[in-house]
Amino acid sequence: AAEEGFDLEDVEGAIEAAGHGPLPVLAVVGRPNVGKSTLVNRIIGRREAVVEDKPGVTRDRVTYEAEWAGRRFKVVDTGGWEQDVLGIDASVAAQAEYAIEAADAVVFVVDAKVGATDTDEAVVRLLRKAGKPVVLCANKVDGPSGEADAAYLWSLGLGEPYPVSALHGRGTGDMLDQVLEVLPEAPAQTFGTAVGGPRRVALIGRPNVGKSSLLNKVAGEERVVVNELAGTTRDPVDEMIELGGKTWKFVDTAGIRKRVHLQQGADYYASLRTAAAVEKAEVAVVLIDAADSISVQDQRIVTMAVEAGRALVLAYNKWDTLDEERRYYLEREIETELGQVAWAPRVNVSARTGRHMEKLVPAIETALAGWETRVPTGRLNAFLGELVAAHPHPVRGGKQPRILFGTQAGTRPPRFVLFASGFIEAGYRRFIERRLREEFGFEGTPIHISVRVRE
Ligand code: GDP
Ligand code: GDP
Image (cartoon, rainbow, N blue to C red; front, side, top):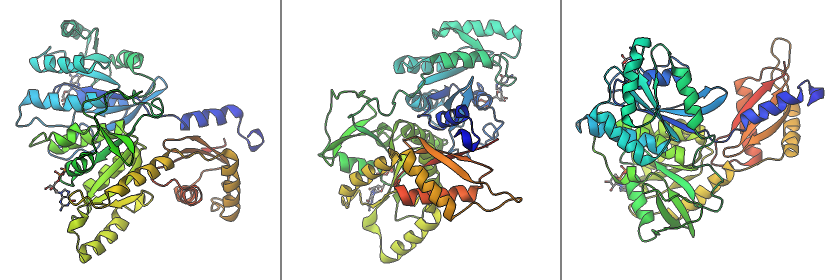
């Protein structure tokens, strides 16, 4: 490395940064209008459109990456939902439940100017039940005079209330320091700690694609009741299902079976639930209704799984209903709408007839194998050397940036760091990704490539 112009510390730092495991998840929960979205914006350090979202507009994006004091984590924003016909208590409870479920720690936001309401008390009960670490954020304390209001929130029994002004930033640093105190370094569902334990599968897809039908089909007679499985936490919303001779943990199946009938905000709940399931899973099976056009919503769900870095299987359901013509158009749609995940194994199934159910497990196993693939550094560099010699980066401004060497910094999903002599264009990065896939497989997994340029 040294002779290529990188010092060893840079190289090690870059590898460590790129190789990080899954990030812990922080959920921000509370009643409407207490300032959750404002706080999330402040935490992620972006004045993104989170608060500007119009009511009724589908919000798919609910998790964001954040960094504080050198630590990275994910933030789940629950600020985007609307009060619905169930009334405020039920809707706060439902959204908080999903978010808490997926989280490793929770920031509970209360409006200090209003004080603790009955709804706040209801959320406190949920938080107690969940047993996750909680930081109590007494928001809208815009100046010293508001601190007395914050002190009243000791009454919630959640420990010290942190007086914060999400709007102006006052107190948010101290609160985030406390968050880092209680937030575990890695998610509770750390991959690999449960070696030999069941793999975690998220069955996701937009409403009516057939998720609950498929779950019932596969769970059917094959369902096993596992009480004491080594290294696994029993979670009532997850379901242990025996398939292909192995036990699989289908995560967050409660959200599939128990249909919460919501009017407004239903899409938002669906997104939150999907995000929660994806966070907990190792592999996402995205179910798509093959009888219907592939929609933006399908694409967003796929994107959610890919961005979360999960292994991916695409299952086209309702195959029993397809005629010749639909089949033709489906193939065209898949090419244009889901071409970016052409690497994902695909199964054409029918939850109704049971068609090709037996292909589901091999597809999941293929995706997980890709997700865990590690390429030895020697092999990677032999490959990169040949690639760069045969297909050099285009010359820019009289210079030719070159990939000097690379290493795989992590797996689940595979993460690569490439060291280069100059800026590597996006097109060339995509080309490298394509060739890496051709050479090493990586079926069913996103791959991350970061490039470090020599100073
Ligand atoms: P959410 O529904 O909990 O996500 O709440 P929002 O983040 O949308 O905030 C609701 C309202 O409270 C908005 O008008 C914000 O500008 C305001 N707000 C949020 N945080 C603060 C704060 O710290 N101080 C004051 N004075 N207003 C705030
Ligand atoms: P979910 O909202 O994704 O859980 O979807 P459901 O499982 O509730 O299914 C929605 C509708 O599609 C129901 O009427 C199912 O009977 C129907 N359905 C599900 N899978 C299939 C299938 O493979 N073939 C056919 N013809 N219908 C299906």
